[in-house]
Image (cartoon, rainbow, N blue to C red; front, side):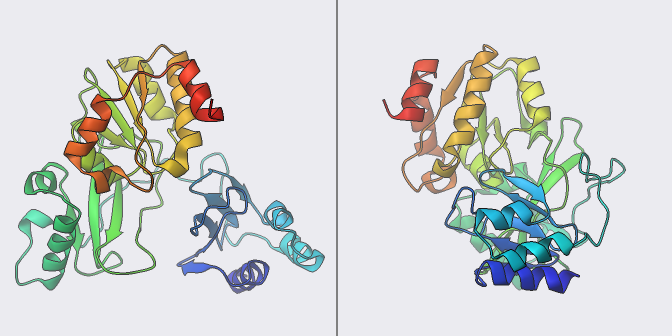
Length: 305
C-alpha cells in the first residue's frame, strides 16, 4: 500500500516531493510555503504542515485543494492505513523517550573521530561556545540512524528527557531528524527560572542563541503544557520571538497571553533573519528595545495600520 501512496502523491504533486522513511514531504497548498513543509505519513495517511499547522487523515480534501483530477480522488478514497492509530493520542502514554544509543556528548568526543571534528566545526560555525555545549549537553552520533547528526536534548524540571532534536552537520536535503514524540512539553524546562523574563522561540538553536530563559517550541505553536505553566507562573515578561513566516501564530499566541494579563512583547526580527543568525548580543539589543504589546499594536501588525 505504501508504494501506492507514494505513486499517487507524486502524480498529484508533479513529483515535487521529498522522501524520508515512512514519510513524503510536499509544499503545503494551504499556506503555500516555498519549502516542503507538509509531511505525509505513508503508513497512517496522516499529514501535517509544520508552518500553518493544517493537518488531517486521508487525502480527499488535500487533493481537492489542489484541484486534483477525479480519478485521483477516487484512488484516495480507496486507500486504507497500514497501521491503526488513536487520533486523540497517537503517541502511547507508555512511550519512554531516550537519546539515540549512539549518542556521544561532544565534551567527551575524541579528536581521532572524524565525526567529532565535523560536529565541533559545525557548532563553531553556528556560533555556539564551549559553555553552550556543556550547558545543553549537546552531543553527536558517529554511527547508527542518527549518524552525522548533532543531538540537542531537552530536559523537564525534574531532569528527565522530554525531547531532543537532530540536526545534520553535513550538506543534505534532510537537515532535521527528530523523534516521533509529543511536543506538548516545555523545552529546556530544567534551565528555566520562571520568576524572570521568558523568551519563546521556534528552535533549539534559536533558544541557545538568545540565551538564558529561552524556551523552544520545536515548531511554531505553543501547546497546552507550556501555556498552562506560563499562566500559573506569571513571569514578569514574555518575549515572543518567532520567524517572519510564523507571524500569524505569534500574533495568536500574543493575544492569548495579553487576554490573561501576562506582560507580552512581540519581538520583530529583521527580514530573513533568525536569532541564531543574529547572535546573542544583537538579540539582546532587539529585545531590550521592544515595547510591550497592546491590542492596538496587534491590530497594527495584523492589518498594517
